[in-house]
Length: 204
Image 1 (cartoon, rainbow, N blue to C red):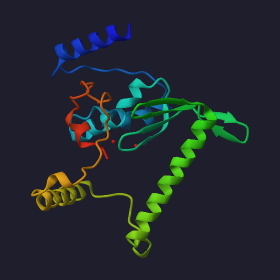
Image 2: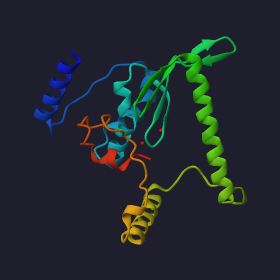
Image 3: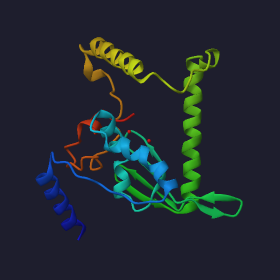
């Protein structure tokens, strides 16, 4: 039946492309206060909206809600929730490794151990980056940014990078696109990622 439902979904997408629909949800006040800002971001009809949707595209193909998704260039580690009380600590329900020629489910203990190992690797990599650039010697910056100004500066940096490498683009490694093949927010085929997925959100 999943194949039949997928065909119906694609047919509906084809018929209703470009049309607007009205969505209504009923939930308790506490959940609504948390969910409404997220829903507004997901439904935005712009690059931001596409990026938010692409970031969580894999949520719809996983049976369990993700606690963490660690993405490499060609491999992904999913840590599955909800968290479970394990006496003095909490454990995930399991995990999933997806790598070339490998799909492997993890039990709660394995998922917790590998999750910690990846987190430690992230900490080491960030520390190395900080030391390479002497960031400890710089004043701490505010987390908040002036979106308009910061985006304009970022696009200028990208334009300069493109200009500097236009003569030999094949030698440079482009940033990893956030969505993987088959997990596009537009639900396109493996060779048809949407524009946001090709750009990446960052997209773990």
